[in-house]
Amino acid sequence: MIQLVKNLLGIRPKTNYKELLKNGTTIVDVRSKGEYQGGHIIGSINIPLDTLNSHQAILKKDKTIITCCASGMRSASAKSILKSKGYTAVYKGGGWMNLQNKIS
Image (tube, rainbow, N blue to C red):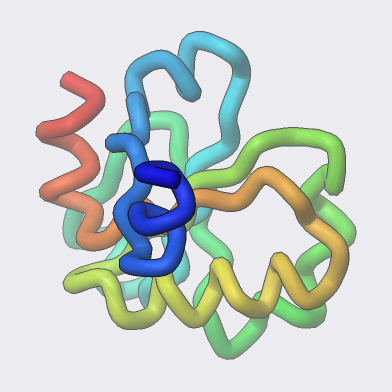
């Protein structure tokens, strides 16, 4: 019963991003190329949100993906896009600096 209430309220366990990375997760930074060049998480790949649909072929549907951007808005959109295309293990990492702190 408690789990049902938590699900209805959208309360989920915290995502352990460090653990996801240990298991081979791909971080996809959906900011523009210029934003990415200004700073990014080492090892992440840059696929700007407006090109995500045409660059999905480089992402494997059976791998876990964490999306990130500047503030979290575009990463949420990227997660939705990927989920709608059949990617099952997609996590919204939010802003890249915040995600960097979570994985450091």
